[in-house]
Image 1: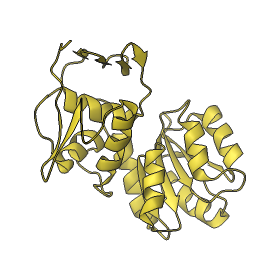
Image 2: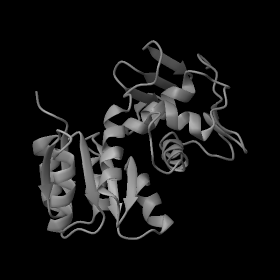
Image 3: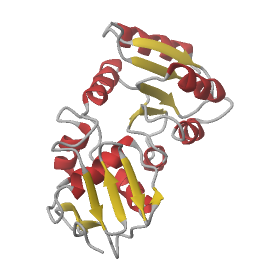
Image 4: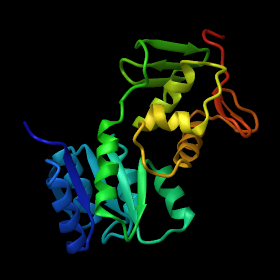
Length: 232
């Protein structure tokens, strides 16, 4: 049996070698790419389970690599950034990253985050089926979403957030409960990733925080799904 496939994308050889050594010690298969174009080619060729992706790359930066990768892959992505500015984290998450780490980082923590993503349930708990909310359709078996008859392309985490909320309309989910359900009980990153991914989800659904049709923010408490099942 082979282990999980990890692609490390960074143009600094010592960092690639350090990360690869730690990941291989956990039984993972590791491949590397040193620039943006070769990273995209490697994702197509190797179909990794997790991508560790640096922001500053030759050819194409990590943000653009991720935008393109998200058109054909739902691999988990941990972005690495040399800067701690919030805007970098938000941009990375907004284009489809699942997590991020700021350099310098602990290789052991990176391994822990990779393992946590690999253990993360791909679907929310409960019986699989199709949920209909008027113009919005959520089909769990095919992991597809339709809005007004048109498909809506969601990332793995966006779909699981939507499904988690939609299965219990009206129930308020605090941020930590969503982390536990969608990212897993052993998630070790920033809990504000929930806010960014829900913002992306709302945008794709044409939803507005001030006038939500589907996902409502309950100030100081969390989020809830407000549509009624089977509504016209």
